[in-house]
Image 1 (tube, rainbow, N blue to C red):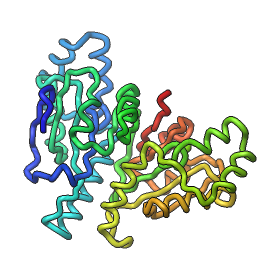
Image 2 (image 1 turned 45 degrees about the horizontal axis):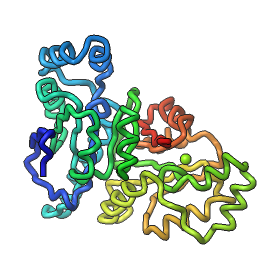
Image 3 (image 1 turned 180 degrees about the vertical axis):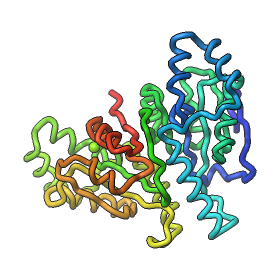
Image 4 (image 1 turned 135 degrees about the vertical axis):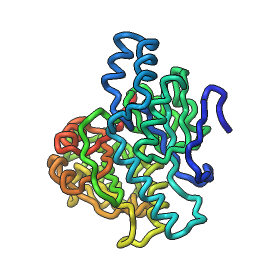
Length: 315
Ligand SMILES: [Mg+2]
């Protein structure tokens, strides 16, 4: 069901079943590099911005931070359909934009230029575009705007903020890296660590070893991704998932592993960094996207050219 404020333009020939699909919503500034245009919008206003976008509507926008991720997701769809042409449990990409339909022509043309299969472009002039996420069954929302991301998280939708950065296009399979605390898991142990120190946090973890951790903001998306991941054997999977956490494996690893097992979430590889920088291991993995709540980790990832998405705590 389309919302009245949402102009829906179908460019995708394969109609997916939205009740089964893993719907990912990206904003235009997350998928394309629109920094210059955004500056123009802020400095000269909407009219000037629209004029510029209309004058350049046939000029494709350069790829943005989430571009490689969306391309890799599309590759997974191809692999799923190769093994089962009737499969409906696919990824579905929706572009959510604060552009007007007039300035949005360039966005649609850019998506077509790169061969991106995007089923819907929603040009919503409404200030809080995240109100449409639930009605479109969105399981992951990527935006370049912190308010957007916090609104989505408060609506219970997995969401993260992407900063504009130079991104190398990694090869397939789709590789997704999750941080543990305050991303996949709740921030309960983080809070004890911050308030009482490492020793107390370790003791808490050992006492709570058999109690699964609470769910973090990205758990719902990780579970859906895991469901698609299970369609394939480990060797043939077009998706690889990773946990890269600051936890030490010796003192704080067991509860994390037990929690994932309890959830039925299979992760291909887990790295317990014991507080070491994550940049070097991320440079080796070369993920299409890396989710973390720590800005120092996000910076470390950006320094090695890894597309990163920040999961803010919105208080
Ligand atoms: Mg964390």
